[in-house]
Length: 130
Image (cartoon, rainbow, N blue to C red; front, side, top):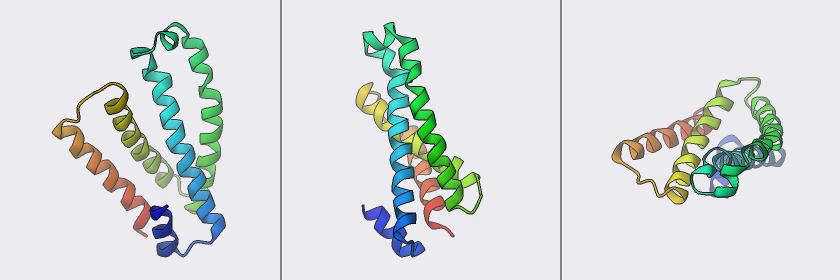
């Protein structure tokens, strides 16, 4: 909630915009988590490996909510689409890295850590640079 407090202070947002930001970030984070299971789950789970069609069906509700979140993000940025794409990309990189580290036990190399720092920096620039 600290990030949302900073955004409220910085942008002087009303509660409806703050609620939209919370919705957007929640959808983007959850969609990245579900997408990780959908696309990488076959590496550690036999059921997922044996049922790729059923796993592909998860994409329908994920896609629906991402469309709603994208629409709201573009609205918040006065019709600009680039912030939506860049914020979605940065969240995706961060979530994928965390999930790969936790679920696949992939170590974070120096190169990966630098890329994560860059991704976080890009996300912060999009959120706080007017």
